[in-house]
Image (cartoon, rainbow, N blue to C red; front, side):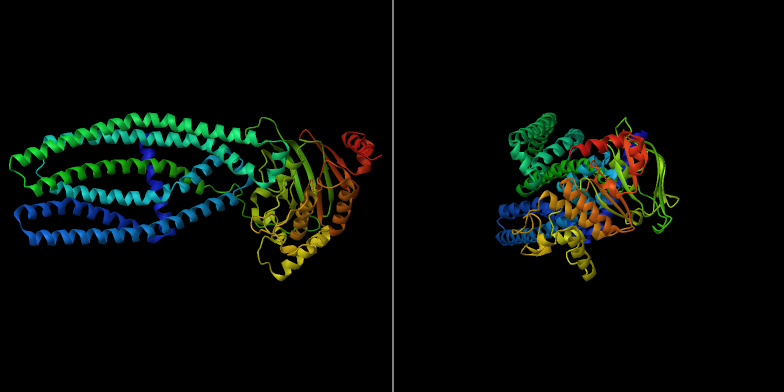
Length: 595
């Protein structure tokens, strides 16, 4: 019983949440939904009553009233059809507005969450459910369904008045059929929720093969390895899996739908027999016979519809509850303290920090303690999987340490305002992205940057060695990368893209520069030149290089060596060569390649 009450209370909270949200986005949508339900209800009663009046006037030979009633009925139907068309157009426009706005909220939520949260399977599932609810119009239909249900109850009361002379045995048949339909709808509701939950992971896979793998970024490799047939095969398998899921649940639903259909036919036969008996007994006129029959069938339809809507609202409530949960997620970066300036004497300190990725038994970093000081030039090196990128992710606040803590000028970074703390860093990540915007937008992330921003972007382009490239383009720095937004868009080589990513970090010009594998697409000679030039650009700023190749080490006063998630060496190039350990071995091995 407690579980049932909890479920009811959760549905109540969900309903209130989305009714308030929809009211906030579009108050007009409520008025439109009320008008639509009112028109449907009043017109249904008119369709029940008018034919009876017309037939009675016709049977009595009262041509005047017969014609008058037919004209009124026809005019009414035309008027209703006109208003329904207007209401439908307005409703569709408002529903699009609501869906677009909530889609925007989903994107806004995704961008505001901490990176570690986006790796959570639970949050990904909530996001997929939320997207499905928006795309299937479950949210907009939810509110209109509630209003429609209220008007359906009003219509039922009106029809009961018309059918006030209906005997108890007919009512008993009707109640029995209603119970059958209620059970059927409950089963279908449960079935629908289970089907949606089972489809979500399969749909995610299918979308990956439908949309992600056909993007230009994959085009060359797809053709080089002839992956088309493999992708097509996996996509077909996903479709087959979805069809199998639909078949499984449709088979379950079909059996119960048949029960409802048989019950409905039994009710129809009962209504016909009752009305025909009353008519031949002289208790009903032709018009009354028609009105009674129409009222009974409409009463049956509205009751079944009301039960169906009630069940549907409950079903939507379960799925919308997950959408509400997603929209209510708060970022795990909860700090609010102001961030002190990064200046002489400043430190970032790792205090016995360990980190383990979700669902992993092994530590990516284990018991790391180190201090980064203002103005230092540091090279972080180590073999693949040593924990270099994880170290940077922790320092940037993308992840929270599983154990230990990170201090910025003596304050735990978890207590600091995340956005303010993040602005202390100019970052080039290992898996950096070049966006299909213009070259200028890739630096400023603004279509119309201020004059000072524009000048800073051009300066960064020149400093990194891309000025000649951009000057040769028809639209120069405003040239789009790819043809997604501009048919005259251009393509950059891997090395040029990497230089553009470095230029982005230079443009940001924050207190601390972090470059994670910044020159992997460049030759060793170009790599060394970039590093040497970058050292001049950054001046006294704090800089951290993360790389497999050791070109940056000669420009750094300090080298940190990670291996198997642990800090194994920390010192200058000369000191580490003298230790004759992992760093010395890596350095000699790479040096031999260029002898």
